[in-house]
Every structure is written in C-alpha cells, then in structure tokens.
Image 1 (cartoon, rainbow, N blue to C red):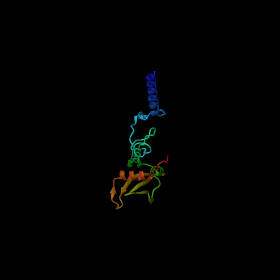
Image 2: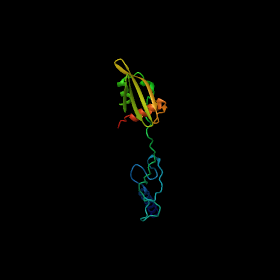
Image 3: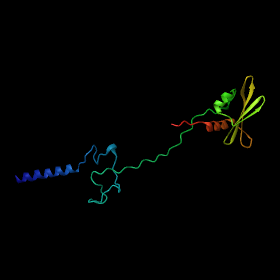
Image 4: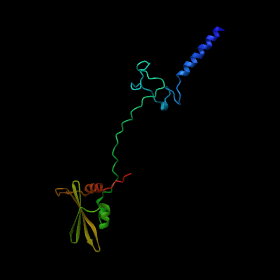
Length: 167
C-alpha cells in the first residue's frame, strides 16, 4: 500500500509540474500566432532569479522591427501633350487647356499668347477668323530664342500648371 501511495504521489506531483509550465491564452510559447518563431532578445531576458540569457516563463515575445519600405513618388498622371490639340481652338479653349498666358502680344490681325516654363517659352498664335480668334500656329523656343520641338515644351507647361487634388 505504501508503494501505491508513492506511485500516486509521484504521478500527482508530475501532473502539477506540467500544469505549472502551461500559459494562459489562446497561444502557447511554442505555438505562436501566425507560425512565428521566437528569438532570444537580450532586452526581454531576465536575470532575476533565472539563468542569464533565459527569458522568464510567460514573457511576451520581443517585438520585431517594422520592415523598411521606401516610398516611391506616384507616377505623374498621363497628359495629352500633342500640340495639334491646340490647332483651331478659340481663346476660351486655349485658356481652358493652358490657363492664362504670361504675356499677350497683339499684332493685328493676330494675338500671340506666351507661356513661360522651365527652359522654354511656348507661343500660341491666334488669328482673327471673323468674330473669333483661332489658333493657327505654335512655336517653342529655349531661353536663347533657339527653336525647340513644341511637344516637350508643352508637356512641361501642362505639368507645371497641373493642379493636384488633395485627398
């Protein structure tokens, strides 16, 4: 009978020892959520009453640093920089597309609307067509008055005058 008592006592003590090792909550130390693995972090390790380098039982895992993400500036929206879209427009159409000119020069029967942007000057020539002025000629030039292809200059002009909505 003493032998059975010792066996029962040994089983009871081993059961209590196992129960003391368990943690409360939905995850255990060995089964972290999202299958994360635990790493030893000296910042969370305990030296009070325990061996150096051993985290205390029930301690939360060390937070992982956030991954470094380099933000890229958003790509510029597509822009219609075809100079031919201006041909035949009246004053209102040119203003709606390009905004107010930096300079208006009147030389009857024409008006030259000048737009100045970084590295180029864009001239829009409107001729009197009866009751309205219409675009009949375009020209782009650099700061030294050398002629440029109109498309890149128009592209710069449109991008500089774009309004970006704030969200």
